[in-house]
Length: 503
Image 1 (cartoon, one colour):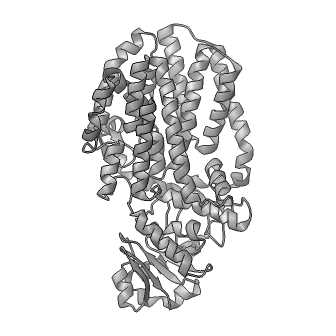
Image 2 (tube, one colour; image 1 turned 90 degrees about the vertical axis):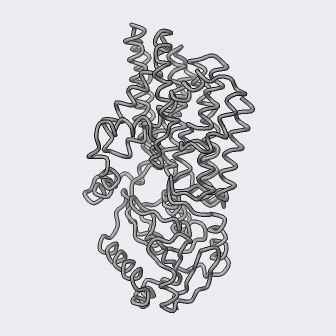
Image 3 (tube, helix red, strand yellow; image 1 turned 180 degrees about the horizontal axis):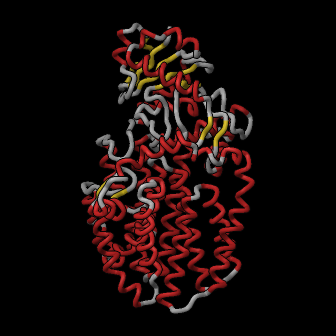
């Protein structure tokens, strides 16, 4: 196990060395904007103006409170995301080992942990690629699952308190983790009812009480945002979310099956590694059932059914990654020769999968297989220049228009504000915020006109107090050549990053 942890730490630090200790994804900048606005405004508030358009929003509070706390300590929230992603990922490896140990012997549990840490770490894969609120919640899902399995062996206060605390964390970080827990608990019920032929109702009342008490404990953290709890269900936000799901509404049943069992949610990677995991899980099913330890197979089947039913709701589909728990255990059961397993590492560099070797290979090649990629060594150099050479009250128009449900740019300009405290001018749809719709449309129109002809709207830019234009090496909407031709002053031009001054 020491070797597995050392290898896991090495691969995660390797990834961070490539990205200059930064995680990817638009959500990172989006959450960091909120945390940094709170710091500048002196406390928790749903009105982020003038640092952001939102004058009300609803979201899971634990992530925002953590980033805000670290920002108050002087650690910028972008770095805080990277720190927690690393720590939660490593902690998840240990929790996975403890879960695997319930269902298999020591050698096979260690082998399963090897495969989980290298290939199936969903905490890392979601967190590193931007969906870190959900990714972090999955650590507490795993702790809740492990404590529930221990409670099934013997009801005691120790494991009830562990379950209660971790379940509360699930409520605070992301409710989808609670959905995963409900599926897991129903799987335990099916195991008892069908395989064990006896049901411990007292045990399930304990689990239900943990869910309800955890929900009650979490309520005070939601109170600042409770007024806007229904914001994600308004028409325009639902339309925005549907843009994710449109291509999945007309797919065939066979394609659904392929997406659920063989495809990574992050990056939509169809992987032979997942195909083999599926086959090995089915091959191991008889063993689990015969030993009356059938929870993993029931959990696997219920997750598949749940994912199939909710495939159109793309955000809910991400729960299918929890079946990687059974994939990792199946790999470990059949491939438990530790030295031979090391031979697989070089092969994984070449096979499309959510594994660390393939991720590292993709990052070196700067492939957009997961989310828009940026060379953060170059990006952070530009951030340092901004901090040292622009007034603190500067405002930047950023390429890509900003982060949001349907907006993401490899320029990552939305991170300028939490990293440098310089304001950014952008339009965005948070999916869970309320703001002036007329102002939103004015910004969209201004951005459209500037992207076509930068010389047309200099006065309008000045009216908004925009001093600089920020464009990354992989620009989306703002062509740097057009700004040069329009006579904007180029004040920073290094490694593909350009900053123009509005004169």
